[in-house]
Image (cartoon, rainbow, N blue to C red):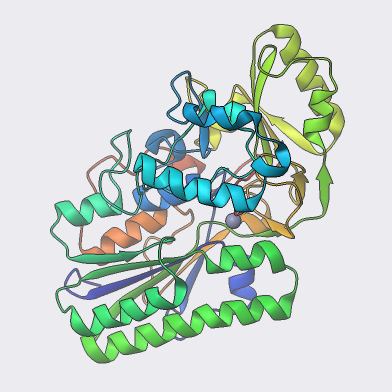
Length: 411
Ligand SMILES: [Zn+2]
């Protein structure tokens, strides 16, 4: 590959290694495929890792929400008195989210899901700025978009903000009409949304993946006609596991005789419960109760450090309880019912692995989603600043997390 060619990058959210391999995806346009370990957490941790080549404790994004005394969401607390039938309804939450985006100017991806409104006084969003644009990270981490901008590489990008069909149409139009464009990144959440509802239905999944494969193949064929040789990369951020069990972790913790808000604080993701404690007694009582649940693991600081998700200021939790693979916290702040599929379990679980495929042999072989950054830099003809990719090089291939973890969604 060279930096002069057009590089086409397709980011297919949640198209994991297992499903991609089973369906033998993209063999015509990107025949070299590799399994990649994901990060512990959800898309809001994995995507920044792909875009920066850094682990969450380096780029600073792990959970979608972190605990702080200075939340910019605190005005939402005024909605805490609404009846639950109103405040938890989609027809209320969706317009509220749209209004909030306009009102605040936040351009990142976020959702209020079913988070109780009174908690917005102590939890804030980590992704306030669009991570698919330069200057997104408060940590100062440089993403592929900072590098493209700094390097003067003309690029275009389509993200979750764009509709599926229009985004592919626009990409095709750019290939034909914008001969300056050297790098195009097309992200789609289509497969993620589909798998949350249909994973395990092999026929339906094959149909959905074929739809995306057909669109990508069409774009690549058009690009080869219009622009000659092009570099193609297709990757994902994580896989999707079929849900088997649900556990009422909220009910268990609420029944311990402790008071949320004064004895402890908690954020319930779909596969992780993150706790902060006001007393040793609260800490001990809750950790003991979580241990007796038999559906997950309380992660040690060593586990968090090994996964690149340990933060000194504990903004994402003092104690993280991670559900075993395929088991969900239901209800959680993400939703009231268990979706058919979820991610955010242990990166070691087979259905957690992501994939990357390319039109060329990738050397050195990619093994972790952060390697997608390196491959994007290569096809853009850019050099990463020295040292930015070295940290955590020992953690890419796994070792020892016994439980499972994940995050996000798509409620
Ligand atoms: Zn998802």
